[in-house]
Length: 302
Length: 302
View 1 (tube, rainbow over the protein chains, first blue to last red):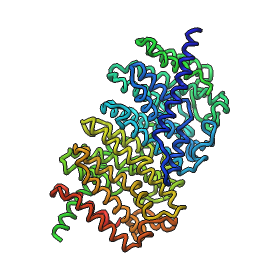
View 2 (view 1 turned 30 degrees about the horizontal axis):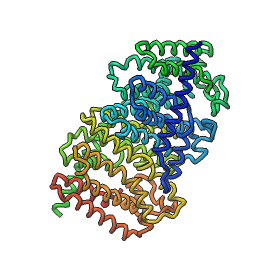
View 3 (view 1 turned 180 degrees about the vertical axis):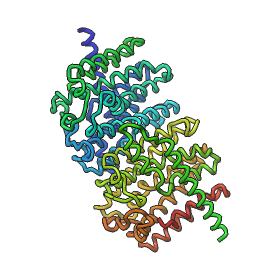
View 4 (view 1 turned 60 degrees about the vertical axis):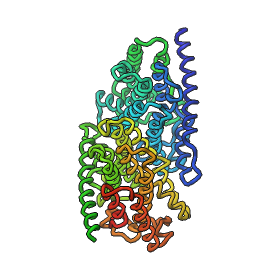
């Protein structure tokens, strides 16, 4: 119990600190211009600042922290990956996609602004991510910067997150089996969570062959994260979530919960978290935050 | 006349060659996966392959050609910048933006597929551009690769093309003066044309202080290009253009033609092209293709 307490306070502090840090990077890198573009940048800020759990930047900075990476570097790279996540939410919420009115307990971007602005704000956040990563202020080593761009690019496009979103659209009209749902989620959610850990390792100058255990950790928490999301969608609290729930079932989509049932899904998620933590056995307390994140991923209530 | 003939055949050959080259890069880098993502990649290919004048890749390879850059490197970088251009057309054509049914004489992506696929195909092409640029196959020098990413990132986002698209949306309800329309077009069209020339110079390992004349060339042809577009929108042939024309006037938008009148607009474009060519005076015949492109930009009929 004492250890859980330590782990909880470590995590609570890290969550508060990453939220402040990412907001601060977004705030300084997205000044609102005094021309007709002001609505665009305002929409980017509305979506990006003050919202979300910042799981991806937290994973990135926690991994970077193991290797003693400068905090400002890690925060800038964290803002880049969070920008990709935020853009995907803006586009996912559009009327032609999930048609959602609420996100983080407030109107979605196309509701608060308009659809055209939402499309362009998402596009601009995508480009923003690569602008930030390619800036020498993120990391003085150009080789590390180009590796960051490559990791995030691969995780974002048709071979990563966007590909997973496409499969997710198809899931409404197809009967996907467990293997296909797993593949869908590895792309839709897992690719970006994996990139977060990978980018932390890149900033830490860990050689590719020294990252295998981190890939294992990322793969396991990625899947656990999605099972937890499915469980929350199935039985969570809309007020805490700040968005509509139960939509997958209503749309007739197969999820881990519909395929496994809630009890087996919960057991599977726990097993994945235990396994993720095992992958970190070569590290001492410098990896405690990554361990705490793994537990948090299935214990969160939103 | 003899010189114009040489210049025309040089350009005709270059246009045919760049079209083949870019199609070939897209074809090899966008294999259609055998899963539920096939519709996404098919939509990307539908928009990217076999269409368009490839002006941006042509500018990039023509600039790179001055400095003896390997053709395959330049073509890959050209495919990256063309992917950004193609994504912007897909999103621009969406019902919530310009709501266009035709592009390059065939149904727009959201018409041929659906809106959700069009949003994701655009997003994926944006990510694709940075995946290609960060791949060592594009250029073995990591420093040049990260410079390519930076140039294209800055030209694409809220400080570049997407910012210009936002101003363009505002143009429907605002009375923009010539200065504001110029700024709008420098962002919406000029930023990416400028990036094409910049990226050619980066691949050619031209030091930043040696690129000033190329920036001048790019700025001038960028503006000339937009004036020519406005003239074509005003008096062009819809069949040749493969898209609806006269939309700016119908939407009450200020353009170079509405602000200057067609005659002054045409004279201004010619002056800019002459000025662009003057910027190349330090180069011999190795820059003839850039000179021919400058002339072509205002002489094209679509």
